[in-house]
Amino acid sequence: MAVYTDVAAEDLAEFLKSYDIGELLSYKGIAEGVENSNFLLHTSQGAYILTLYEKRVAEDDLPYFLSLMAHLAERGVSCPQPARNRKGEVTSRLAGRPAAIINFLEGVWPRRPNVAHCAGVGEALAKMHLAGADFPLVRKNPLSVSGWRPLFALAAARADSVQAGLHDFIARELDHLEASWPSDLPVGVIHADLFPDNVFFLGDRLSGLIDFPFACNDILAYDVAICLNAWCFEPDHSFNVTKARALLKAYGRERPLSAAEEAALPLLARGASMRFLLTRLVDFLNVPEGALVQPKDPLEYVRKLRFQQNVASLNDYGITPAGCAA
Ligand SMILES: Nc1ncnc2c1ncn2[C@@H]1O[C@H](COP(=O)(O)OP(=O)(O)O)[C@@H](O)[C@H]1O
Ligand SMILES: N[C@@H](CCOP(=O)(O)O)C(=O)O
Image (tube, rainbow, N blue to C red; front, side, top):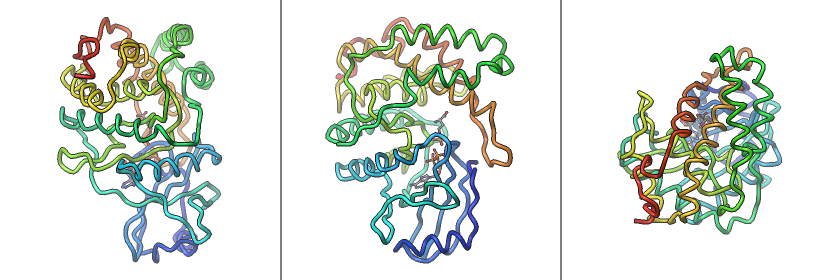
């Protein structure tokens, strides 16, 4: 559960007077997510999500995420839309935090993603990449390769308390990633956190994408690699080639990956593993006192990283070179 900052009912009711979305009927902290404080609001006009932005979101970046959601929706990508207050602003402050209200999106995220879900997310990711092509704002990815060593510094001294040898494992992998990270692949707007809990479905039909605070401009195929890691491993930690093939083929039907992008996927997936291993490790070692949050398991991403280190060819993802376009 993620509620780092509590909001008193009177403060919230007062806050809502600055919006034209009805009167507050009820609200509750949301039992999911780890990054920000989220509340489900019921007002006399409907259901909304209130987010108080926490540790990893800079206030200056809020216009990027909030206008991106509007930009994507105009181009047919289903995602929540920010509500404007009476001054016409999409961001505000509440309980000392930057705040925004977005509309509630119908659907549920898949607890056990199946092959159809993986195909759905591959297609939606490619459509999002295409729709973001003319988005005018730019935000560098603070959690790309140059951000990983500073993150590691926050956890290095205690890494071995989580698993013996973890410090040296990460240090060696960081050396490799920093030396070989690609700089010549196509870039654009990426979601950067498109995990199953950020993709809603009605049955097997994808109904929308949520949670854009990590969105930024970075390597497009890196977003694909993040999804391979997040969607294609089974609960027993094995990699499901059928799901990977479905995800990659569906992506490639909308936006074919180039040969260079395909060849880079194993390396990008190692980087994607490192990124989530590090944020999870830092969070696991630093749970704020009194916060309602269930930190995610960093070791899940150690296992994924070990798998990705051993990927020998695209066959391990269920495709042959240029297979994404088929
Ligand atoms: N627009 C929305 N419509 C419906 N539910 C939402 C919406 N935004 C967030 N949620 C709910 O809140 C949970 C946490 O939101 P999320 O954005 O993932 O958190 P965080 O800000 O911590 O990353 C989601 O799993 C979902 O249940
Ligand atoms: N997807 C990340 C956690 C990011 O936050 P969430 O609020 O979308 O759960 C991870 O799994 O480490």
